[in-house]
Image (cartoon, rainbow, N blue to C red; front, side):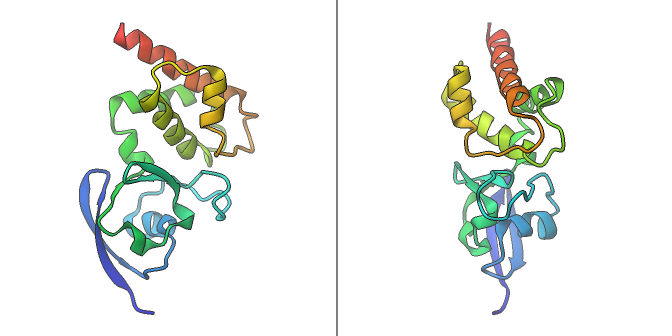
Length: 160
């Protein structure tokens, strides 16, 4: 099979990349484009570490064939945290020790941002539910939940 060239929007910039059509989009991002914020945890679509937004939907990039993103709008952790309101979520993970090894953190942050885009003040149970598709081996989840609650509180203070 020969390589193909496709164009898509990546973090707000038109990007053209050449690779094999069935290459995992995760690998294309990390190797061809050099965006290493998206992590590989399991390679099977179970852990959420490789999450990205494609056309506004959070997906596991390890399951997405490269050719599928042609013409799409892709947002990675690098693009999402470039926005100040979303950077606050990532910073809360650091301040609350919600990030240890860092493998799950990008996916957790993306899931938290998606939740906070939908709900201004989600409950702890709602946060737990929204992060349910992301697995962490290090933190025991409590610090991650604390981090999202801290981001919620910071958002309320900023809006007051």
